[in-house]
Image (cartoon, rainbow, N blue to C red; front, side, top):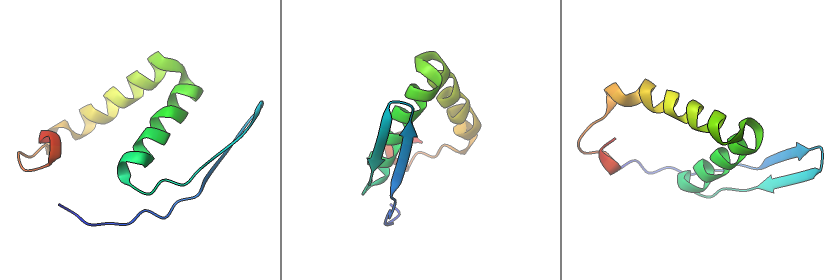
Length: 69
């Protein structure tokens, strides 16, 4: 397993206000990214985009990676 540190300060401006995020882990960063995708593209658009990402990396899957990826 790779050891890494995330140092991010994410600020998002929406017509109805602002949002700020400071993820401390890859999991938190992913949740923020998915949340922003759904807000921007809608449920179906976000799902389509994420499916494309999974398809892109499907051939690099290894048995020793978490979750089989």
